[in-house]
Length: 210
Image (cartoon, rainbow, N blue to C red; front, top):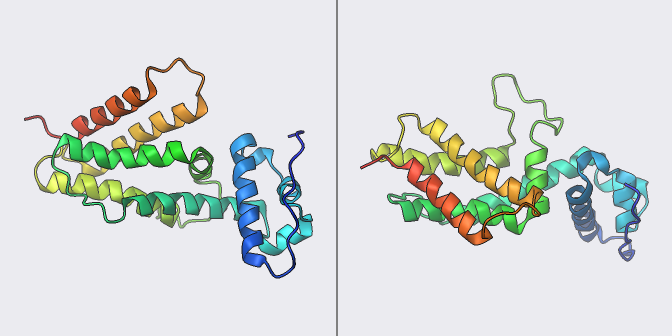
């Protein structure tokens, strides 16, 4: 990365919490522009207007910054589902749940990139018997599991394998969101119509044919 970065105003000593948030905000912006491997801690420090050693006082390594941003993204997704009744029984109700995921990704493209480009790259050595997924990511996916599990329990699920169906729905949503973020210049159909029809298609695919 050769572009110059804009420094934020220096803060007085003692503003540790505010400084930490500035580091995370600068890193998120730079990761979104140049990717995780295209950004150094030196560039993040320059963007914030601090020295590299000062940055290390808050985050010992770039991976620590990336891990925090990754976890925050999935916690945000989880919060968006809080209080939502997941006992959906028809296409419209299922589509409303799926739409939350799409809105999360498209309204936070940098956070979405970080969330999905870091899984398995955070240096978290999970036991071999456990899936390679962070706890916030697992909690977010568990919401999809619950949605499908409720359908299955009510005899409305398209398949007899709710785990596979939950993963298929997640993959279908991720495919649309990631493509819209990564390829904005593609000659897409009307954006809102495309999103609505894709989400409804997935919702219909989740229900057993009647």
